[in-house]
Amino acid sequence: MTDKIPGLQDWQGYKDDIDARYAFKIFFGKTLAELQPLFKRNVIERTDELRFMPVRAFQYYIFALRDYIIDEHYSSDDSDCAVDCYFNLVQAKLDAAPEAILPVMELLLPSLHFISGNVAAYKIDEEIYGSIPQRLQTLLQRYRQLRC
Image (cartoon, rainbow, N blue to C red; front, side, top):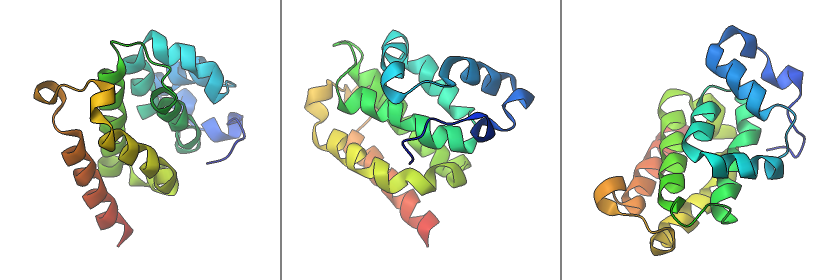
């Protein structure tokens, strides 16, 4: 990950996809900190927009979602949903677009492990979201497969 906000060259191709254009409209030019209120407003939508970003923009902005959770910017009734969004996004990228996530995966792993080890703090209902530690193991297994 770079600390440099993605420029136009990092968003190359966004005009070709309606969802990427919308992500550009929301995210372009913003710092990770500036995005925290937008994640708080609707973490599901912001996470969905991350899915459609060009690779280099995604590799920067996924850290806005990570920070939203780890730095506890979420509202008290949103922590479980935020964690689910994060784990779903990482798994989806590992499965469908590993080239987008593999370069930043080592930087994401500590947060995934932290969340998995602190499930109670995030008020995660396993009947709804499944076992976060098990989901982490699934992510790690896929990550190991891709690294071989």
